[in-house]
Image: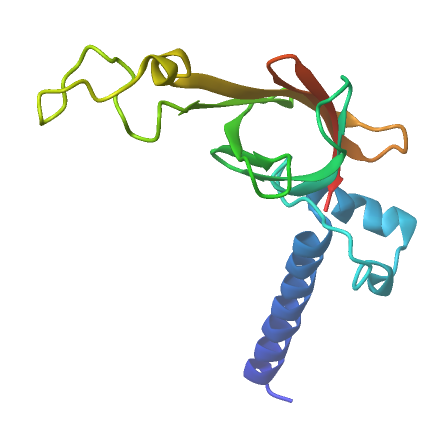
Length: 186
């Protein structure tokens, strides 16, 4: 075999080894690469088990129970959170509300959704302001039930759960209602 063919064969073998190592990093996360040699875990135990592995920090999808801790605050739901490099989006009530916020380097997750509701369906709530016809546009009843600002806030912290796996736990608050949030990788 000539020297040029041997060099090409070695380069190809080295490239295949680097690709295999890179694939292992993508499947298991950077911390698992050093542990994979010591634990001798087979690739078959990593593939197809439905578990999500972190590539970088807390980024990825999280889900878990959102349980009311006060009376008359609704039923328990399953919340879902997506964390990216610029913050997070959290849907605590299965599609009716989305809270956006930030994730600090120490794993603190916090955000607030604020919106204005009410106000007589687009009618002015001040009965003293005339409409296009020169007559007042609202009623005193509409003024009493004018626009209200509603907010819902999440304060949570990421850390090792009781089972030794990463979890995000915290409190969701809106008015007099509070909910316990416990999320795991989904």
